[in-house]
Length: 132
Image (cartoon, rainbow, N blue to C red; front, side, top):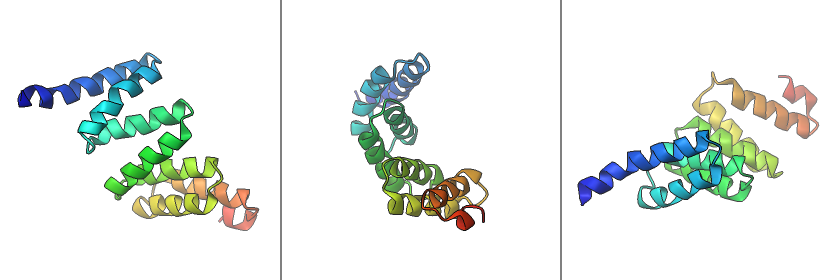
């Protein structure tokens, strides 16, 4: 029984990816949610689930999943940036700034956190900071 359970994870992940590619986002979510309940450390599954929640407009669930991922994998800049983007979208600007700054510090060469910090500065009316 244990080998079967271990083998189920890659199959479920592949099914979710296939469903996502076919545009069946809710069905992909339905595959991933139970997978992550049994395997909360499944990095690829969690990342896909967060993206799917975002794409389907389930912003609160996407924020929750990105928070979980950023907490579980604090060294992953993309999770901080994704969380920051959703916090920015929901007008939680101070928290968004912290997440963008964390993403930038983890991966200084990646342009997206810099860009997002610029957008945030523009949103706050700080044009000089946005262009720095």
